[in-house]
Image (cartoon, rainbow, N blue to C red; front, side):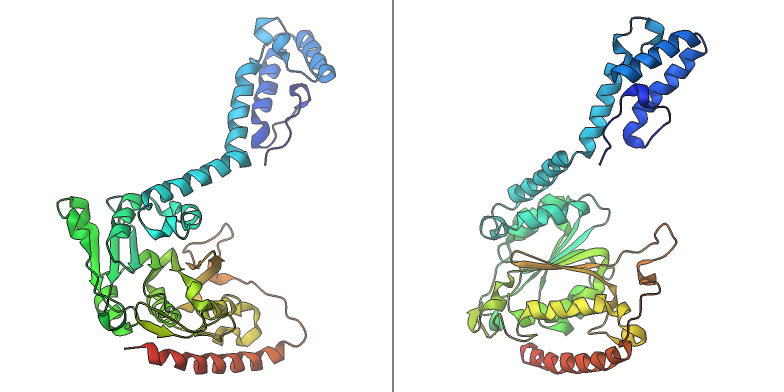
Length: 369
């Protein structure tokens, strides 16, 4: 946030970026002083006592053209003003809404309020790849192509629900004459079939994806199985999103032919939200003392950087590669975390928690093919 701009007459030294135009005027005044010390002394005193710029001073050689300087200052202030940032965010939201208006991502769920803020950073990324679980009519595939650009690789998984009883036709073939449609790939696969995900989907995109979206069966157990298989194939800095998590609130229901039981108080993994909350402990294992590194819930969970929840969606971000200004990577932290009394007791809780997690995970077996 920019500091309040001081009167030009009081700016004797170059300040931070927000004051650089005032500093430039001081330099101009210094040059003038080499020609007429008395004249500039008078101009400086006028500036100090009046608090105004020298724009009203009539000697041409001493005028700093403050109107131009003020324009530049206002332009810089405009680029830092929170109101203008808000407008840019709303623009991103509206762009997404317009492109996905034919899907229930917008008109039913209002996901554009989430996606517009979080996915715009990937637009224009070179060699971008996105995977979406759940493709029925192909509307999303075409919208993703439009949103991320014709050079994006868009992979879609389609399936017909329980026992494939809801066979879906994927009409992306309708754009077969469009060269960019060659980058849309459709896989026919049950999202709970880890083996087929590995052999057919992951094998076809060995370098992984920047964005993965689960808009498939909406069965909480399927959300978990798919995530724990696909997560290690999300690229550094990428994001994994699970939509339609409202199913985790239903004690007993049916979706796409699947009968399932969940509920707001149900233990994980029956409730997908509760399972994802468990992953938060993995992020913080560096604060669990010497035994913290042993706290792992599934393969690749050490790259989880952030977990978030929004309206009817939850998302997980992958750790970035690279180093900070101190030469440290994300994995180099925490650095010498504080150790509190009782740290020896944490080791026992880690063992207990892992045992409970493994026991809970057995409930997922009934949902695997």
